[in-house]
Image (cartoon, rainbow, N blue to C red):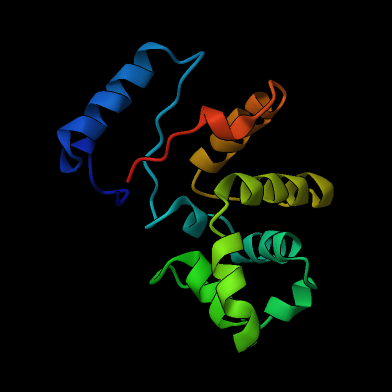
Length: 144
């Protein structure tokens, strides 16, 4: 959703989820991303470092990769790899909970500032809190 829009542009089901989360702020949060996917709102340098970690490759391998947000992030990253590595990368990079874990590790280790939008910090807080409870992947539901 663009910053100049209010939530009336969302489908009624999504608005109900947002309203429901507002009633339980200690236990729930509903976040509407600015970009096509939340990954497009993470600084590309952090996303590429996390992707490289997840793929088990050197981060410099993705130096020429441009994350535009015009396609799924995993497609843009995979296309920057040698042809024989692309299929595996497309599958591995769709593991969003694992990618989120690596994004958090990079942010924490390197004291990277994520900047705007501000909801990224809220999401990291939720993931950290959930991770301390065990399997953080089970605590998330992505709405598109």
